[in-house]
Length: 79
Length: 500
Image 1 (tube, chains in turn blue, brown):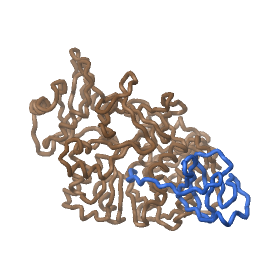
Image 2 (cartoon, helix red, strand yellow):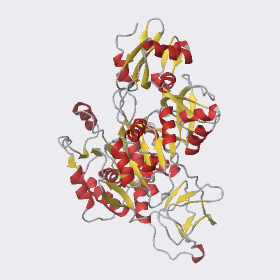
Image 3 (spheres, one colour):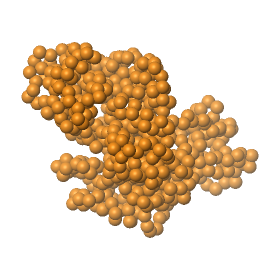
């Protein structure tokens, strides 16, 4: 996963802190609602936005708040 | 962030989906991703500062673009139509490079260069061991360097960093937004920004790319049918030729049942051409895209529903939008400013300024963005009161007659509507009385007769008298570059010595 618009260590996936080179960790079974590749996840204020680049079981939390998928307006293809 | 992510994600989500078709050969996303990783290793081992491609479209285009991104080396596609004298100074500016060259390009190269034919490069990239490539995530690294077409002087090297291209794609394309059966026919040359954005957009949407290296209307139509093409991007001259070819070969739109969407851009589309296209393909969604190299491609879009409304409604303002390039993308801001830098209101013509995360506005280390991040496009235009943008030409093309700014587009648009006129270009020539006066080059439609006096009378009847030309030349063809841009510099040359 890559992260946009955030300078924080309060972002977790499946209960485990997100890192450049993550170490294997057990995770939190209550935070396993899946993440889907290509989806963008935001908090209620949209101060943080995360693009999922690999699907997985873990779901994203920021400062304890679960991130939700962002609705993006579909534009006509111009290329 | 790195543009290589687009291919990695496509290969992760749909490895077996068809990514590319070229000359009847198909490539999956998994194959393309593996090829880009091998290419990255070749580029890394060559110890070069640039990766350059001097050839027509081929599978080497996405492989070299993505491989260079993974290797952390700027990708510089070059115009294969340039003469040796034009090309040599550009090559000197990208030394040392890993040069992938088509026919005739292998003689190029200097000390420290690696020069390979496109076929050899592809053979090396498509087979063999692959190991994982760890790429640089620096958003400010240069991903692509494009030399501008130089229609007005020495080509400038526009720099597009990963952050600009990633912003453009994430802001305009939905990941895996394409259905498995979708296929985009790509005919724009690889050295054009539209050629770069076509690769990235379609990969991120997981839409198959069908490549047609050299545009030919009959071949374009044949490929549409054969590969069940669902979308395409064309420049205005291509659309004109496609319509001519369909009329000539008595094809109707039922020959193109698979086609769902056609986007166009790269030059000003004459309104009669798009009107005809809308009649010919009633089921196709047409989108007009306006953008520049320096803005990572598209910044405004005229959507399919705007096209339909323009055709269906009698309201003059709605109909006029067919001549508009539409509204800015959600992440892009547009402003019109006068020569003194003052922001203008709706309907007031001036220079178009643009701002947004996809806007680079940078040439080889020199940024032309102002302190607030606005990029002066050098394109002239105006907004209507709903925010639709209309182009009136390059700011440098404005004809200043007796202190009045004339837009060549206004005169050309009128003449394009005339049934006896196929094409027209208005340029300024020196005039002792007025500073500049209007000169006109006209191409008559086949079998049509129209005198200079009749053209003058037609302009006088419809436009203000300052638009009436001093000189009219009849010609068989106007000079366009291969991406549909009118070469006004060449037209001006025709009138050398004709001023007063």
